[in-house]
Length: 286
Length: 276
Image 1 (cartoon, rainbow over the protein chains, first blue to last red):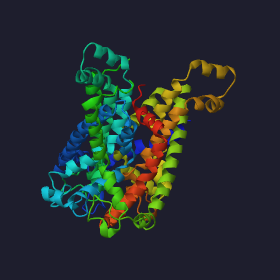
Image 2 (cartoon, rainbow over the protein chains, first blue to last red):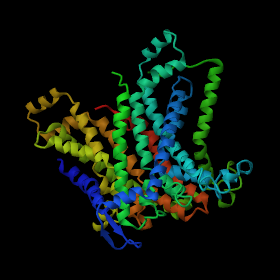
Image 3 (cartoon, chains in turn blue, orange):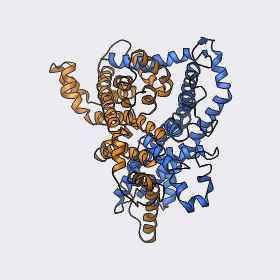
């Protein structure tokens, strides 16, 4: 009964990881045709290279923007919509709606908003007069704003997901706890910090883990919005460095394997740190 | 907690104002996309915020010439194969881990869990070669087979099987039910909610795959919706309304499906957060 799963996971998860670790030692020539195995030092060289260091930093920066922003917005929207108002169902449906967009759909919507020639914002006269950067060079083509724009699109796309999860978490907090605190004279703000937030702990931990994993595996947004640019590599994440069409190692199979394995290692270290660091502080309600 | 009590007076107005603003911000990209998809090319850039013209030609153009119809069918086929495959393999392996006693069970289970630590992006470099050597580039097998088993599904279903009442299992055993019979008549009906959640989760994640179809698809006809949108974006950016029409066509089916399956969606998304 285990056989089907074992065969698939073995062939398409474990074997490729092992094989990539071996392939990552190979140095290839500029055309990417002949590769020779040169021992393990390619990993060290690649890790130290400016290109990889840059990609690592971009990836971290992307996570540092999208995870807190996504989390705060998700909590904010969930708390905002957690009131017995008439018509609240409609608002909840709207806030959840971006969960229906795929990476490609969301990215193309934002591309059409932000693109400097054919984009919506740059073609609104008064707006682009007020913010000339919308047209030249455009938010996606300026090195200072490109990563933020990609991050914005990504946060928007995962908003529905965070909203749904945090809302479900809020529903799980027993009403009596809030009532008891209110009787004791705790204000709304105080109740939020002292009760809601700590009791949401496990939910928020899960959201943070998922958002972080997503941030480190981001690819589609970069591919569709900026192609890793503006040149040379303002938005080149580790995944884009490995798989992107405009990546400088695009036809170097050896180095692609190297960076893929390095991504695995980075994520491994990260999950260990997350489990140790945050897990200890989370309060699991009984 | 049920929803909190409604505020009154000025606070109520403020609350609605805030809800309104957020709704506007969340829906703004959707709005501009939809109205662009419904405009002829000559009108798209003139007044990007106003629906000043209306045509369905661009949508039909995206459907046929942009091949969105074909892409939707491809995505559906691939997502169905992956979903059914994951359900079957997960139930089988989860049942083995939860109900059977065999040497090496713990070690194998740890091995399964370990695959959760391997990010998809770390395996695709080699998977592309593997699929190539099978002759599976530009094929449904290539798009689907690497994903028809998951440790996540196995883990989720194992937890569900373990939570079944012991008495039930013993009663079935006394009645002489074999594993297959037990699974079919007693266990599967009991774990239906978890199966539904897993199905939805599998379907959505395979439907949304972007990088893999891009890596192994070179023939335009074999693109999925996601990689097809990429083709449209790089091929036709000078016709933004066509690209937006493609985006709308790609988004609508999932949007409708999620409206129908709203309840199981919440369960599906939260199932990953369930404590073991």
